[in-house]
Amino acid sequence: MLRTIANSRTPVFITVHANGRRRYGYWRPYDSRTGKGGCYAALPTDVCDRLEAAGRITFGEPLVDPAKTTYRVWVAGAPAEPSHAPAPRPARTPAAAPVRRPVATVAPVAPVTPRRAVAQRIAA
Image (cartoon, rainbow, N blue to C red; front, side, top):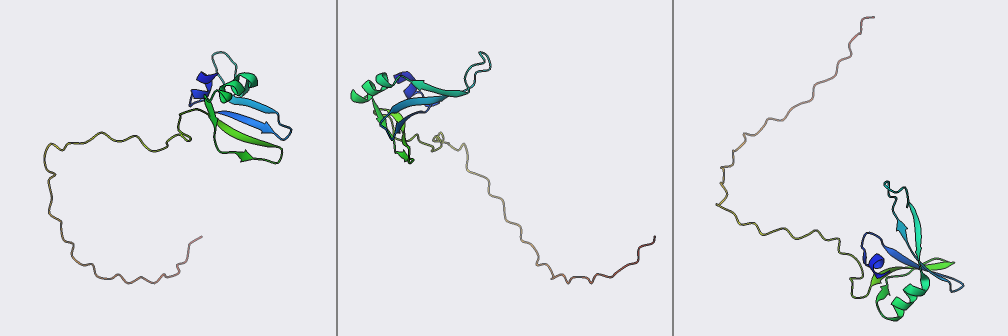
């Protein structure tokens, strides 16, 4: 169970219904080799509840609906939200100073006056 929850490619959620029923699950992507998937898969509630009681998993921010509340399930000690920052670039050491080219000056351009449009006859 913990391996499934820890996998960042399969986000696991817990849904707590208004009547107190709890359900853990995740989206299982379609596998073209086996022809299986493309559906929600449930995890055993009793096992996940024991992981929560032992402090091995935590819940994220709630998404509240009138009939249920949904939380993202994280492995304890993992960041609350994955970092979407780009990976740091490796340090670049320049081999030589960049070559600076002189800036060319541009002669001023005379203002252009618009030409009048003249109607023309089109031969039939």
